[in-house]
Length: 318
Image (cartoon, rainbow, N blue to C red):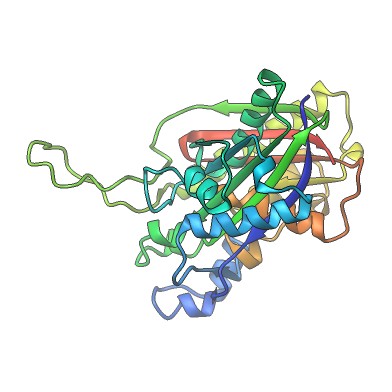
């Protein structure tokens, strides 16, 4: 369609928190977390804000692509855990890089990185003068977790992932679905202290219905991958890798079984980082790209699902 991935980058905080570490503050165990979620440790920020991690991932992506900040035509970013609502995280990244381009955030929770890619494709198509766009997903999920709730605090981690896109023809197809609603996954804002607002305030932490999330996610992955393959007259053998949102290893395994695909086709790193929401897919993509297992010309599928019941998948030629 309208771009190729010129380079990728990621950043995670140095502090690794193991399942045994969490078992010291909440009733859980390494066996329970590993079996039910697939996470063994996650990175937790001790002194870095979301935008600071985002900037570090962006700098690595620019270095990997051999592109300078002043060459960027746009920066698109996503987060559900930024330290400010305004300025947006993309503006913070732009300032940190010293860039002078358009900067804009897109909010779509765990699927946001794929929404950023779709947005970039649209901007490339609309603005013929655009040559290079930076996309970044970054999260400090530890800041929106209730660490007395073992059903959520064991799942998530902090980190950032980025990619530099340049005009090309390697973004082949995409599927995006949004069902809306907050009954399955929700992260409320704090409501402040307005004396006139009378609604009961919800706690500003991740709220998630585990079983409903699981069923929705397995269905979303299966349907989106099937749609991309059928629409593009491809077989799974034509796909080198599937890079899914790293939410839960069992979700990925169940989706693979439903699709009749070997688990090894899915690139997974959830055991090291947990669920990093919008940073999940770009972190996994960067690790895959740097592993040497991905070759130019390979076809890959990225897929994600999450809050707002928004799910997406895209077909890319590397």
